[in-house]
Amino acid sequence: MSANTLLADLNLQVGDISSFLGIDPKYSVTDFVLNRSRLDDALINSMITPYSARLSLLAAPAEPHEAEDIQPEHVTEALHVLAQRFSYVVLDLQHTFDPITVAGLDLADQILLVMHLDIPGIRSTKRALKVFERLGYPRNKVRVVVNRWSKNIDVELQKVEAHLDEQLLGLIPNDYRKVIDSINLGRPLVESDPASKITVEIKRIAGIVERQDQTVSSQPRKRLLGAVFGRQNSNTSIELSAMPDTV
Image 1: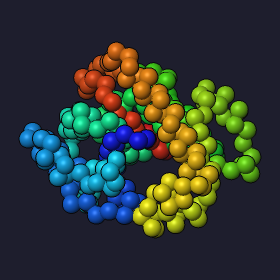
Image 2: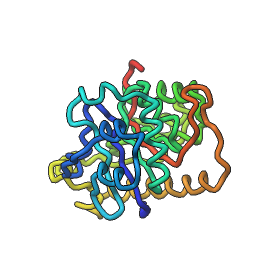
Image 3: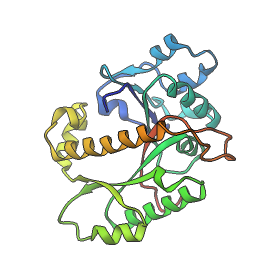
């Protein structure tokens, strides 16, 4: 994505995106929420951490207890503010359907559900899709991406798609060593190894998401979920790993 993008780490208990990017944020989403009533451009800019000219981070709290006072309505209000200032807001959420996560899910234009091609991963993805359906999200709001895919995996993709009743958006190849090296370097793989198969697939998926978002943005806004928190849809995209069996 070439536009101005904010990555918000809403995995409030154990978020570690800042370490993946090799940056040391001074402020977190907790500070952002506590000051939400007086946010202006200067204060917002001081609380987010720039990574590059086009990417900034709103970090997760440094300590889990710092998130104790954050409520879903606080997150909703903060995301509405951020959506007015960034072309894209990408959320990294917890792997459970807690109220904070649902607040982010409800505001998202698109959801990327990341799964592994094993029995627990497929089962968890199926359950997550059912939860999305009960939340009232349209089917085209949720897309499934396979992580750590290998041709050696003895699972037929067509059967997985039939079981999920969902077409897979992408297959991110398995290269554990390259990913770990990237994390340890604090540099995203798309920068440290732009020619890798993982990078090529991630960019392909991002291109599809961006084109879909432009299509959605050109249409009149509709309320996707009217009763849960009384929120309206915003220009936000998120990524969500596959849910555990207990959701």
